[in-house]
Image (cartoon, rainbow, N blue to C red; front, side, top):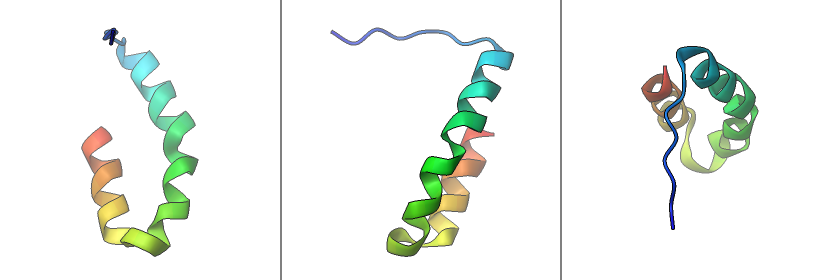
Amino acid sequence: MTQMLDLTPAQRQVFIDTTRPVYQPFEGPIGKDIVAEAIAALS
């Protein structure tokens, strides 16, 4: 069963900051532009 949690703006920012390094390894295989779009969608 999937449980959804509502995050406060501060918690959401912590999530964004913490997961940002995960995106870098994908820049080569899928392209920096797509990675940039994914990051922008989180902001």
